[in-house]
Image 1 (tube, one colour):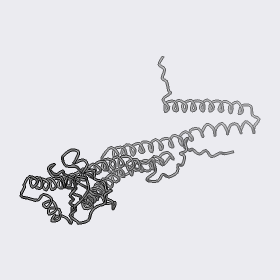
Image 2 (spheres, one colour):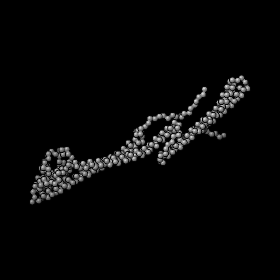
Image 3 (cartoon, one colour):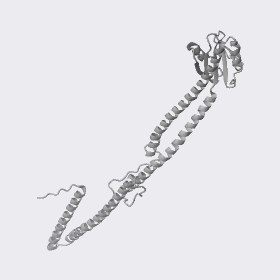
Image 4 (cartoon, helix red, strand yellow):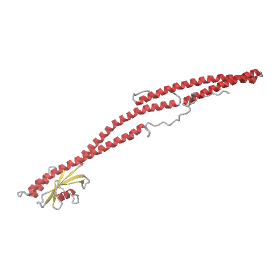
Length: 338
């Protein structure tokens, strides 16, 4: 009974599920969520430092402005306190009521009991309001500062400066200003910094994804080609798109495919040759065996047996040569010289 022998690869490649482009184990994913995360963190730290510095700059500038202004005014009033030709209380009242920046800054005169008695707006504040800046100014004898919220929950900055101790009616001048305009400027700068960071990240993201893609695409082509090689298809070739290390790798794999294709052709030719060589003695053995089985001639039988033995020895020699060839291919052939 004739049997057809088919030659199949010893190792059948297992089919693996297709991976998505941005799978968690992909190069693009690792770059985006590792390197880009570090970049975003660095930009976030830099942006935070810049915003903090801008905020401090504007708050300090506002405080210095108020401090210089209130110190100038208290200096003028302190000179009036030693001038007997001037009414100190009237000068204080006149300065507060004619204050030119009353639309932006609230100027207050505080008596010796710590109560606000004059304001540039004409409205007396609630006695329960916090005046930590005034307490600091009286305790230290110099300018006091306070930053917080008013009774209307508005962010304000207050600066107090003590008047001359010679005056018994007024103890300090206090300036209060809303910092909403300052916060608006800080917010504008914050938005500009955030926009700058985003505009800085986008080109890096696009260039990085393009660069990683230029690596991933050849690797994917190499992976597809090697899978076909594993299935015995050595006609596939990888296009050479670059002259870098990946390009050299593609050239090496293509050279390997050429060698494998040549080896495959030689193997097929060898199998064909061996099949032909084996068929001749097998045909002779089969023919003489049928002749012996059909006839009764003793001479013919002896001749047939001699042919069968001879062809069997020939087959044994061929099998031995095939085994030697297999050992040479596997690197297990040992040459002994006597």
